[in-house]
Length: 218
Image 1 (tube, rainbow, N blue to C red):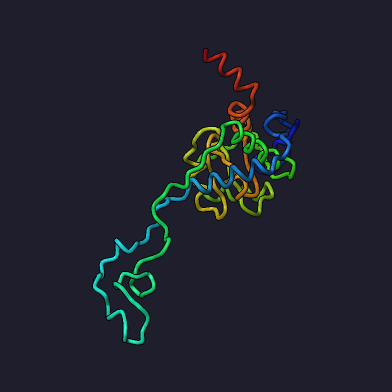
Image 2: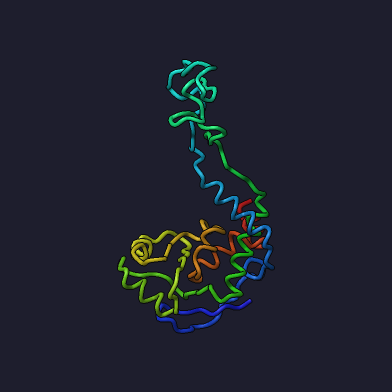
């Protein structure tokens, strides 16, 4: 598969051959949905808590006589029916953590990346680098690429200038491509990469590149 390459001025400078395994995956909605739910669940702190009758600090003395008052029978003031009383079936600290096989997580990521390629929501630059951390430089680059909505900028290695320059641009997030995830890719419309970032993605998630990496390491 070949994708267009642009410079920071939005001009086409050539084409880049990318992995069909990573950027040409068929959409699997079920796996993408399950991965998204897993990520959102794992973000939950699970610290919500409520007081049961044993936790409420109120008098346990019977409030009034059982009979001959014309009122409903009533025990202690910790009853969940009374103001200031306890909570019935309320939340308590728990873990919402979910897990998925690595192959499914990687499949979901490839599905979302491939979907963005099909929808024309991936912009590849020949080189993404700025000499000064100025917001104006990032804003001008996004405008030249025709990006008017939200965008996520993926870099191969951490770059303080790009991170600082993009932090003040509304709706723009900068992250290393090794940290890309399904929720972020679905939350931001356009994905901006440079050639080095694309190669890093292929190195991480292309089965052929990963296999070669293991052989070299061994």
